[in-house]
Length: 309
Length: 84
Image (cartoon, rainbow over all chains, first blue to last red; front, side, top):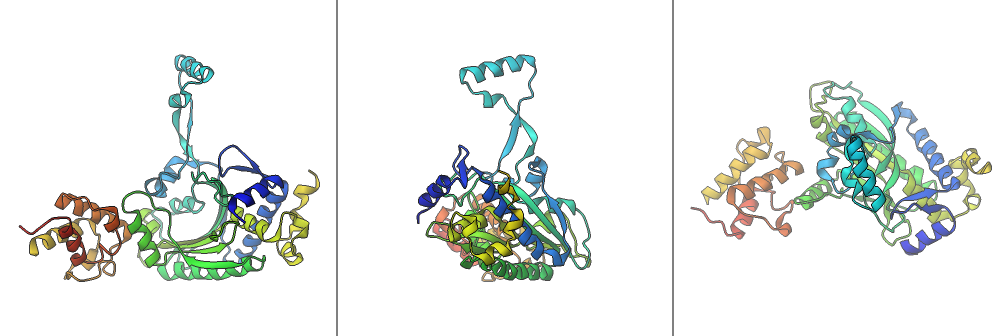
């Protein structure tokens, strides 16, 4: 089934509602019940590390976005927020432009808030200049992430939920953390009836030198993606494990307990992509999904979202 | 051969962030093994272009190009630079 066909089916079934920009959708209560069930499902799996948990604010501080390196590396993907803060005179001109279909966006000003591109980025600045404990720091975060990639492929959303597990500490600890999560995630997702692949991958670097960055990431196997079919012929990443070496440890001057630059790793679950993969695998009627999948997701518990609608 | 290599070494010293890896660096040493990160390799690339007044075409902006001093020199020579 082509991604176009899948998208049409999702819209016809009312699972997604076109929100007016490619890759932007309102979602049905059923769809949301799956996303929330998935969140609980992966949270349970992360319990053992007793991570600190934060649900990231829907918009973040612009400085945090800049500090993450995303602005320099992927400016084509970020979303900043403008607003109007002119005086009465400027307001008059602004309203003229709005009413006459003129360029009112030009009269907007930058603000100090922006959309997050990834969830883990808010963790690193929290440990700026810190000496980390020997056992490392474990964090669990979720954010509504924005990446400006308008696309008619329903698996490529501009706004999507990332649920991430983060480790800060030693190189050995970071690598072990990532390996453990890759293994655990494969089990968790296979248990939901998904047919998975595991591939080394690279981030979508942009500009001159992008190829060098991508090849470096691939050669050093810094990123692994767990893939599943979401309509198109090429399987899409639904989860990824990333080893950052000392990239964030250096950027935020974090040290290990024995004085080395801290390393970090993160493992992210793309809750929306996993949901779409589940719809693709099991169909559009939640009550017809395999019993063991419904039980593992405890879908009956979170279906209160549908009962009252 | 030495002038081009000397200029390459200067760029590596300025931008490569090799730290201890820079000492005793041979022309055929794997720079990535010596501590050259992908980020630093992009800065080295820009430094090389600056130093020799060249623009390296996209097809040659690869990890392989910047793996050794020898491989960097080969690309620089391909782009018409010769020893003085």
